[in-house]
Image (cartoon, rainbow over all chains, first blue to last red; front, side, top):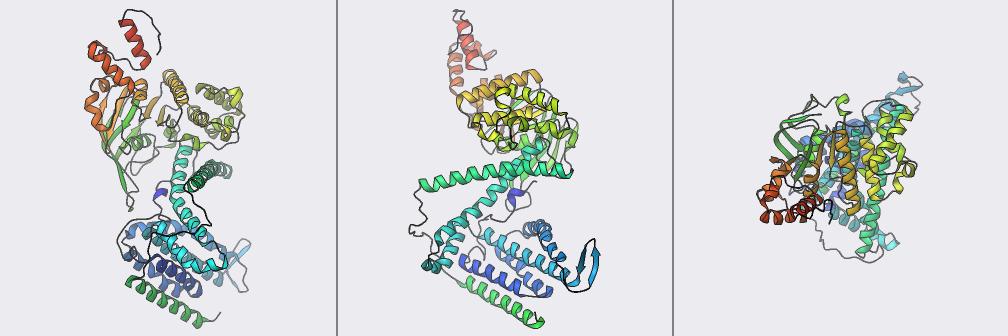
Length: 271
Length: 291
């Protein structure tokens, strides 16, 4: 339970690195483009090649590699559960081995590994994005990128604010979660063992107070926004000037390369 | 339950860029049954100290020995010892989750496999001990109570299993004066009756002096002073550098002390006691006069 408060997603770590000084729009487009590349690539080898971006991005962020690697390791287990679903999708091919009512095929195994790698890659780059970008700047980037949608009536500013609040709340909720888990552990809740029934109670003893806390915080936040005269439909100006620089050209070039690798990989193998 | 800290340091988020040192090489022994107040500025390490003693955090260096069992960087306190420790953390009302106050208070006992009728009996007694009438509160939803009532219900949920060591982290923060006074009275009674070892984190010096028989002062992660409440009062000026500011009660005590130095022989610990002392001194014999 310890250390939840230091989980990187949604956390900002002030700094002066290559990634810190890149434009948020460039970083967002980069992450979006890599997501496309990762899901375009069809072979494990190509996704592994894309994964080389992670050490490169860590180096470009100035964040301690051991810290990021540990966070990826913790996420790997959880993402692994999601990826394992792929194993159980029926496929018209001979099974490698049979697990009870389920038969695991070579194709299923490959898909599971692919999904696992893709999600971890995006998690790592996403964590580095929030680590190197203050939430306000990140939201400004999203709003500017989505600005053209305003013309078709999309409430772009409101989405920007929602995104910023959501990111901002991840660490707050993790801290609250840690505190509540401690309080319940002190009352004798064991989170690591016990029968199914006990585990459900243990989960409830944390989830119910966490929701109560989250609603309280959300209400207070809404009041605070209103008290400061925030109106979602009112036009807003921004104090922040965003400007592209040479770092963003480097990001664009890297992205182009990654997309080329993914496109080549897809063209090579067929559907 | 006795508690011993041997060269204990603690760093939050050790090994991450968010690492934050909170406590550095603290060594201290606390005898079973004593009530110890932890004072100091925000961020001075008192909460960390209390959480380490309760086994909720483990030391980064050194070891904490609680009831003969050890907690260190490698080792957690064993479950049988943890079961004898209670913790009322900041905003304990955030730990309420059951449908009724009675079920929530009895939660810890149910976890320990206590038979249902005994759980109910003890839950009612615990509610009573924090001043909530069991008849009125047992079947109510904890989420419909006032802030002060929630707080007391949550505290009852910790006292219910009669922990031999209880940690309180600013239990009166954010309560109105009446709720605060009531809570302190009930805690005082519980401490007197059950004699648990108590670690009481507070920013209110009056509470520390009233409840504790020993005061630990923290400053920048270090144990800066280890004194009795009487010593703290006598040498108050010396401790101001650790962020202590005199309360109206302490100002009154010093005003009295300037004219009647013998008040320091056994300084009164509450405004009421000071009033009694003055009344006796002035010869009016109006024992029990309250301001």
